[in-house]
Length: 263
Ligand code: DGL
Image (cartoon, rainbow, N blue to C red; front, side):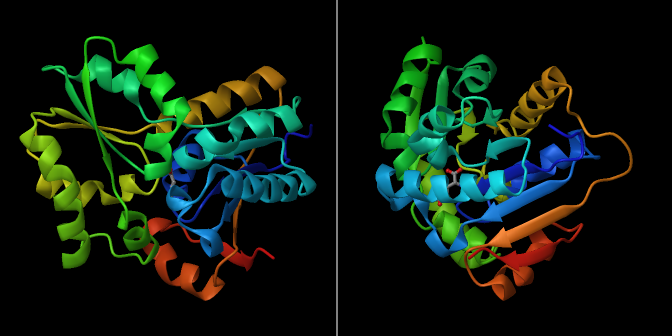
């Protein structure tokens, strides 16, 4: 595949832009095509079948655009659909993501880890398998966060409503002694500044955006199709209202990008 072909990245909404930022940092020359499925958010409260269907539609479109690799920048979509996508496209490099249980288990000092994620992620068999594999000797407490994704979609990263919601999710985990919190949804890294006000400074926050970017880099390098040359463009599509996304973009993607309708 051509070096200058785009990399396709998608999420249920704007959350995957936190992953896109890590990809852009590590791979400045790549052309990035990002689909925000804002018209169908939140994935976290949808059935796996519904999510799989959306992922198929989006993946097919990114493939039509000539994407040389696909990044599922969403934990919820990964647990529901990444196996299906890999089966459909066995030769396409596909990077999924999962809550950072392994790094958190290595980072915790007192052996108590909290996971903030969507209901869909926490209820999945894939998440249970992740715990079986990496959480030996560590107590893992899970906290679904309904409503939080919608706050980030609105661009409300620090207002009273978001603060109250986040505080309500984090407090029981802190009260139970968690010294490490996993941000298991790609929307949540945008709440790091607010989290820094709500949790003591010694609590470690982990997410997987940078690891996803490294994995993408290594897959492209193995295939010999890393882009070379000057900074590549970023193009964004949304299945929601493009004007709404344009409104929140300056907070979430300060470099700016052209936004088009995904129909
Ligand atoms: N950003 C997605 C994730 O990483 C989920 C958001 C949603 O519920 O749509 O899990």
